[in-house]
Image (cartoon, rainbow, N blue to C red; front, side):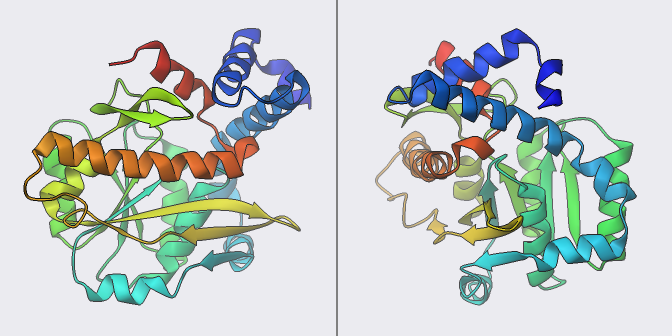
Length: 274
């Protein structure tokens, strides 16, 4: 609660307005409750790297032991296809904890690499160094110049690439999807990259469980080749797969609206439709 006093009125209004647009059936009290919890979750996640870099290895291991994977039986079959794998997720709940848990289950020759758009952070680097001390291969790929080429090269090396789909549309290519009953700009990079590399797209989401535990849910993979017929143009393929991803993401948000950081982003995407 004290944290909310540090949040600007404009930020609170942006959250509330975005939630109202997406979920118009909610009461004012319900909207404000979602906004408050979402804002708190956002700022706690910003401190997560600091906590991880300073906490003991034993404590991290304990957190990971409390995190379960739902759909883990799908992993061997996905890896057996020996195709590029592109994971998509969003800033919901303790998403980084979920990625750490997943990285524990993948073989050493298929390390997980997370795409990052922001600049170098000492706290973040310290946290990732601690992951390696635990034997967890979770790497960072900072995209700057020619991001598509960087990403394709990483996939060709056998890395499993992770993209967060709920990012600022000014940083990436977008296409218009139908989301929360309205046209919305949504990142099309995952679809473009999957088509170019013939990758499997694996949607995953981390969400809370009772007793301060978490779960990582793995959805059925999206085959970028099956979901894009040869008769379709590149743009049609991109739009089709992006809409498929957006529909999955919308379900995640509806299931855990209090846990999602991206409400203001959703509002901005609608303010500037294509």
